[in-house]
Amino acid sequence: FFSQQQLTQTMPYSTGMFSFFDDLPVLLYGVGCGGCLAVHNSVIAADNQAAFGLPGDMITEKCEFAGCAANDGAICLNAAIYNCFEPVYCLWRKQVREKTGVDGSLPGDIVATCCCSYAAVMQDARELKSKGLAYQESMK
Image 1 (cartoon, rainbow, N blue to C red):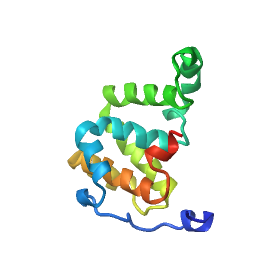
Image 2: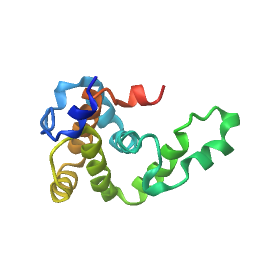
Image 3: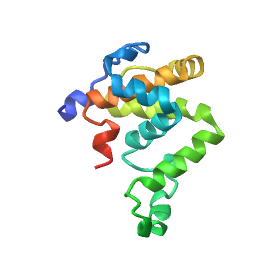
């Protein structure tokens, strides 16, 4: 999809924050369960690892008999963190920007996520998808 040089150059988001109808599946996922989409974005941005270096694979090892995928432990841990402290998405949005090469700043991320959190989450999902990193591809 994109060369390493293209991903390291910074650029603006490919869609606006309120461009909800640019991607109907992301819109439906974000409206149906915005928190789940936020957690998926965070796991994708961290290369299928749990936030803050927590051992998501330790959880997955204990649940392999139930058919858990490799990143399920990371999803569980990030979901627990997000449900306890939703503003953590400000830090995760920064990770998404760094992963996709999007311009921005932490103060901008804070404003975006505090004022319009699900709009920011859906914008990040569209950006990850535009770079070939959408949640569908990461879970294969």
